[in-house]
Length: 72
Image (tube, rainbow, N blue to C red; front, side, top):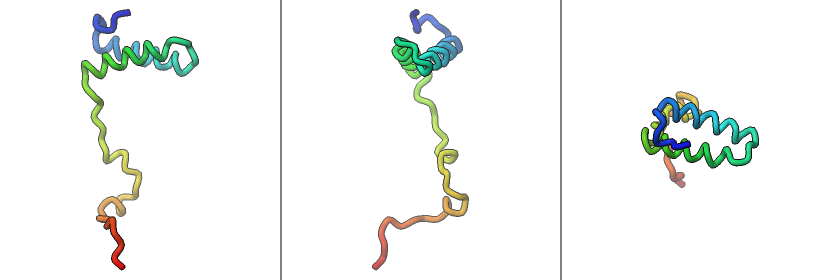
């Protein structure tokens, strides 16, 4: 399988399929999944993260500026 010849949608679908197979314990599926995912990252770039959704603090705590030192 040549990942360079696949369209972006096909590449993404195959990467998901092979990653699932790797998680189920298929012997060489991890390497194939990695190769497909690497090609997908090369084409599309790294995924953009929304760091606001990763912050699990309450909304009140997000607005507070926390000092890194303690006044003695």
